[in-house]
Image (cartoon, rainbow, N blue to C red; front, side, top):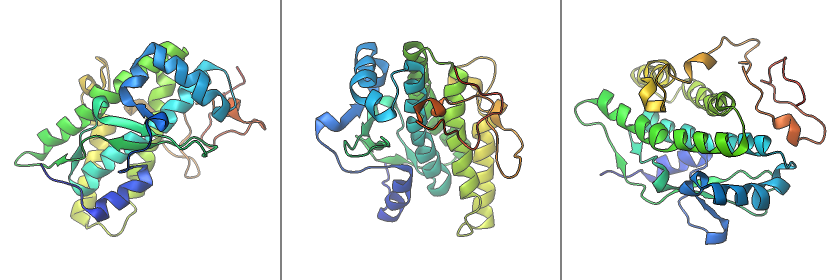
Length: 248
């Protein structure tokens, strides 16, 4: 297997990659998010105070918004560097900072060796996407949706927002050649449209395609409300908040 270079690691740090371990009390293992008992403890003891709410559906949505960065991180590595990080949930931990009032955890991978496309990049890309979604994000969304009583459509859109942001930012990077930008655009379209629903644990459709809406004034409005405003003392809303969003 290959490894990420120091330059690549530094680039991925803006997507919250962390290569340093922290004390166990500041670590949440990915598999902890699949445990009803552990998740309940995380909600009550670690997130209620930081997120300024005791509503489980709000906490669940905010947790997935933070967790969504793992999708941006792994897909950036795939598209920008042709390096596939093992995104399975057994390989991931959230590293938290007790002094961070916004609770923006970083991601630590037990094994950071990466795969690279050999002969068939399409087949390799499918394996990276499957590891990230079917072996991780699908499980987290299912667990949190059940535990927090929050709609999966909200959680999937929380993930989609950061995928759109990452790829659209990447496509504006003039350090890439035209050939590289074409590949990045193809990856973007694959993830949100062409990737088969089975990679996302669904039978009917790719869960991201429904969120690929045209922008208005350079803003892509959400279809669902992420409930962020319920954590704000001033009822602040996201710039992408749908107009129909109302206090629950």
